[in-house]
Length: 124
Image (cartoon, rainbow, N blue to C red; front, side, top):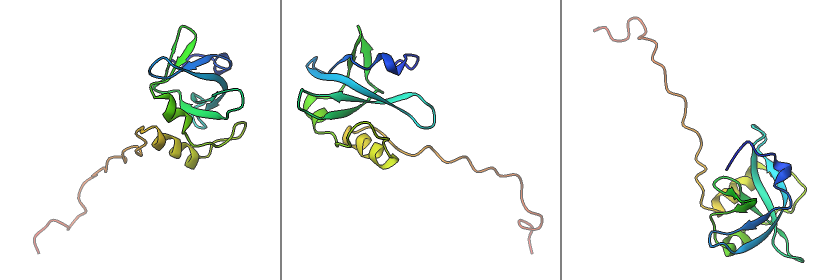
């Protein structure tokens, strides 16, 4: 998703699933704790429905509407954590798994071999 958009401008926009079916209206936007980049949108799925969390990456903002690359049924079945509260790392992980998104840990830093210790590779 376009990362230079002000998340406040997403609120109130319509959201559509991968088939172009309307999901609802963006109610809130959640930012990544570390980067401040918009990461999740809470979409009000109906008048008396709950909000469903959808990932903003790999979603796209097209002609002023959010297009989410998932089926409406999958979005409506997303874990419900309520809105207006911080998403914990565990809740985010549940959401990533629900959407089948890769959440593997970053690769470990490469080992640095700064040389051999004296006497280790010499014949005895």
